[in-house]
Length: 187
Image (cartoon, rainbow, N blue to C red):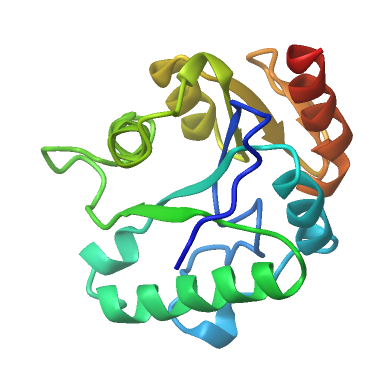
């Protein structure tokens, strides 16, 4: 499979999964393909963002595997469908990185540890963290961005971020800001 990139942009978009791309299951996990439900307008956002970012990378903690609630194979099926549906709508996800470990297990690949960012950079050496932005919905996503030296945008339905990050109610609503960030750098 060839990866299409926007070669005019040196920017990378890192995205959390649950709560940013799909509906978060409160107190549970997306363990089956049918449990993965895209948030409103997220596929349209991916279509727009794909034209402006060189890479789009998903980084997600998945301790449901560590708890024995799902298998690596089930997670791969969920992600394969997610990538396929994004492509069918004109968007793109270049790669998904996940950490199956339970919180507190060493070595800890879980966000906020930047291990998944470093793995992405090893796989895609053109990734420059100073030209990367993380979009997430939790404090650990924001810490992940800081730990890797990235910019960060927080998704919150309502309210504000106590740490001072830019906040939007959805990825779609953050799209204009993200595109302006990239275009401002390229002008």
